[in-house]
Image (cartoon, rainbow, N blue to C red; front, side):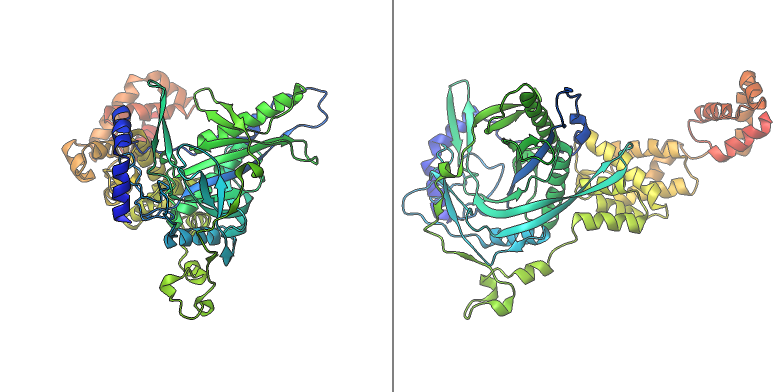
Length: 549
């Protein structure tokens, strides 16, 4: 498909130039997306006394995951987020007459793997359909999808989030997966408000998507955000989707309605194309409250499509919701039924294993999934459940943590604090990934060993870590020696400093002798200030207790 792709790109040269001129900064920086969201109970508001029973939210999700593949779903065009506009477009992607789809096997395998990880039933025979709608960035006027019989159905997603008063209780819930279907992505419309025109970039047109449809099992934004985050981790573990929401690799549509428990579900609205877990939680919670307010005023909730405005924190109407009849579904005439096989024994005669998608071989190759990994971390290292969530929230953080443990004798519960607070704090502040950390696991392990063996105090160790971050390549031992940060080992010197502090604060000494032992901590702080944090706190406490008794 290389030659057609080049030829088609030449046909779109003028459009490329125009978009590049108006949008020179089309590339986007990758940003870490926070997974924190508002709590379910935050939506609760005082209700009018006339309401017999409180209205509650009902949430279902449709998640579009871009398949991690080198080429598109039905053409050989490459997939690259940062490519120049209209540089990855084949004749088929541009819907030129006479072009036919050729199914990408990698995309089928990715859908099957995802279905297996989500406990779905894999349909051995599925079908492709045309879904008609007329957008400028959809050249054919229809999308190839799976409406009649998708590749995977009837699964479950078990997700967890932290709740309780201290946000330390692990709450587990299950969302029902209705189906997973393969389909094409559309292109991008770039709106030029200055010249009142819209420009089209077809690089994304035809990229393979998995649409994961979840039943309305959730009740608030926090649950939905937790479910999406869990799915994101699963897809990343499988390698079927990179899950970078800031690049549009994972986009969420939320179907939101309200009702009174025991009654029929209310009229739903769909909030489209949310690309952040945090925004998803906020959009859902706002929409639930908006619908409750509408009903309490005696109004009617409209069946419509809405968008979330992150600046105002509100959802805004876009258009009326289309029904199935609007899409005019029909079987895709250019693609035969999609066949997958349970095992090698079920392959038809003459079909090679390399030419078929075999479910059993894909099942055997599934990695350890995030929920299992979290439980293993808690059981193996005796860390708190919330720490296991933090470790898995950043790509590569588990490997970093375990590499530090292998190189130090320090207890896992002490190491976890350094990794999740000191290291992760610096990474978040600098907007860096774990792989970009200037402090390697071995370097951190060396610092922790020096602290464990009494060469530096805990406060100085944190100071040394900051310097290691600024001076990449310098070891902890070098920094401690150059800046003379080692613990004061001269007991006579420590006795002298402690005596000076005691003599300078007679009022504190009288308070200690009167029974207020907490004041001793103030004196210890003064000694540490004199020694710039280099005094052994255990030794200092013993000396001060002796001098104030």
